[in-house]
Image (cartoon, rainbow, N blue to C red; front, side):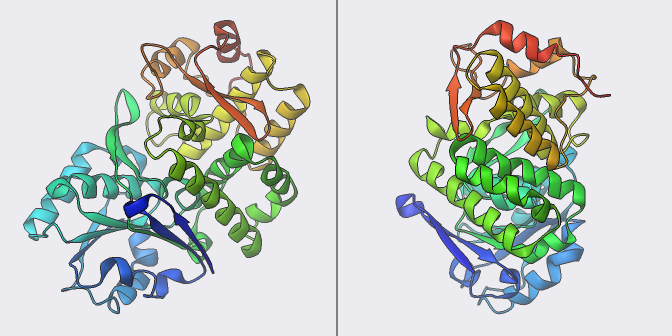
Length: 365
C-alpha cells in the first residue's frame, strides 16, 4: 500500500495506491461519511467494478443508497450534453451542496464527473476512483476537469481538486491491452520531462509493465503520481511548470480532434505527439540524436505509433494547434525537450522545424 499527498493547503488530498483499495471502505470513508453520494461510471466499468464499490459504500456511513449514474462509454460522449444529463439526475434526486460525487472509471468519466461536481450548485466535493492506467497516473490527479468541443479537446472545463484519489491496481487486470498501451504513454511522459532515472527504469521494465507485473506497475504508478503531485503542488493552475505535463499533447490533441474523438485513444495520440516533439527538438538542435532515438524506442516498445495519421494533414495540424490552450497572446507555445528528463515550454521555436516535422514522409494510414 502506497500513500501520497497532493499539498495544496486547505485543498490538499491523499492518493491511496494498492491492490483491493476499492474493496476496503477505510479509504473512501473519510471523504464520504455522513453525506449523500452519487456514483458516476459508464456502461463498461460499472458491470466490472460497480459491485465492489457498492459493497464499500455500504460501510462508509453515507446517507441513503447512492444515486447510480451510468454513462455511455467513449470519448465521443465527453460533451456538455453528457454533463447536463448528470446535473439533471442530481437535481431530480435533490442532492444538496454537502453531497459527494464518486467518479468510477477512466479519464473520460473522471473528467466529466469532476466537471459536473465543479459546477453543480457552484461546486460540490468529489472522489476519483480511476480504473485505467492513464487515469491512475495522470488525469485523476491535479484537478483538471472538463469536456471536449468539436473545435478542440478539453476546451471547456474548470480546475476542481478531488477530496481523495483511490487507485486500485487490481482494476488493471480487466483493462484491454490497447488501453494499457495508451496509459503507458503518460508514464513515459514523466520520465521525459523531469526524471531521467525513471526513464532509464522504464527502459528496463517496459516489458514487465506490458505483462501487468504487479510490482512494476505499482512502482510506475507511484512514481508517476509523485511527479504529478509535485508539479501540481508547485503550479496548481498551470501558470508555469505544470504546462510541461503537456509534452506531446499539442500534437496529440490535434490528432484526436482531427480524426474524430475516440478514433485514437488519448494516450495513443500523446505517444505519437511525444515522438513528434522529440524529432522537432532534434531539428532545433536541442535534443541529440541518441536521446531522440531512446525516446522513440521506448514509445515504440510500449506499443505506440511514432507517426501521425495521414488523415490529419499538415494544414489541419496548424489549424487545430492554433486553438490549443497553451496559445498565449496569439502565439503557439510548445513543450519540447532539451534532454531526457528536461523539458521546456517555448514560443521561440523555429517554424521551419515545426513545418518539417508536420511534413515528414512517415505518416500512417
